[in-house]
Length: 435
Figure 1 (cartoon, rainbow, N blue to C red):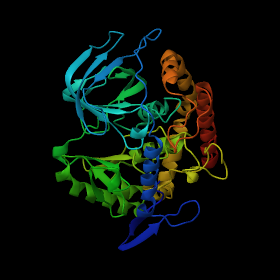
Figure 2: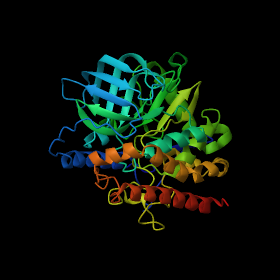
Figure 3: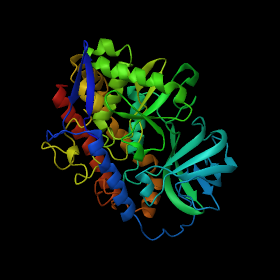
Figure 4: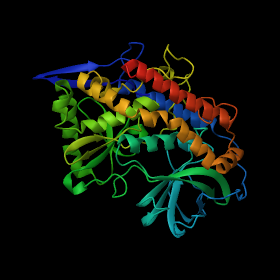
């Protein structure tokens, strides 16, 4: 897990190198900490080698009312794309069915790829609109294997829309079958990538999409290093824009020493505020590791979109992520400003920026306090699908060493999540003097 890294702030003509510290006041750098995720992935892969899951026959659910996706391939579906076919059936009849005999498919993700319930990437030959979610050649099927509630990603995506983090992935819950095997309930969504119905960028105008990267071992994409030493990967086809993008990011880092007014020349400050409000509430374990996205649009740096929240909202193993927990809450991890990290460590020391965050967090209280009702609505709407999924994948089983050991039943895991969100909100309000 990458914690607060060195950053360079220019004040006048003097360059000051500031190194933030972790909760134990130990100096931490990207190079020193990046091996933690690498080691954990190796351990997970070793521990996940089990007997193959038996083929499970198709089950027709009572009130079978969510879309069904069938994927077939004559090849083993693993980490490299293989040819296959797909059918998508909307049982409500709202959207046209899809039968495509010419797709490619692979297992997606890094750590999540080691789970028994595999996540998938699907590529069509042409842009395809699935279930009204927009046109895209590439689609993701998120397994939510490490989240016993199946809804942490949904909560993050929905809240991102409300708080104003742009270009949030569109999604729909679906039932999935792979080569005849019943895989259960997935989230079908558009990936975080450039496109009209995704992150709407103009590459000819110098725009580009960036992702925080802990090192070359974590991605097959090209990486640039900012003046502060942060690694940012970029998409294929953006090479012509990356030099200008790095200049904008470096100028943003330098402007932090001059305050919000100076930052606004290089960054959309409100996007950073909105992104941090979501991040501080949900406390995503990967906030400073890999799942943080940024983009350059019209010559400015923006924060977002959001991605990968299965290990958030307390679903974190304290044996692996000890800094997620504090003396104020050693059992559930509801306390602590875990996301005051890399850029945000310094941004939150700027009084004007911090006040913007507090004001926005206060404005979002109605939506935050309504999260429990949203959870209840999800559980009621998808009751049959949740029950079926849990009959395939044992809800009480810890599927990854970084995941919190789940409660014994689905209902108990839902209760934990609701109580965690309430306690987290109350703790933040107390820190910021919000009544």
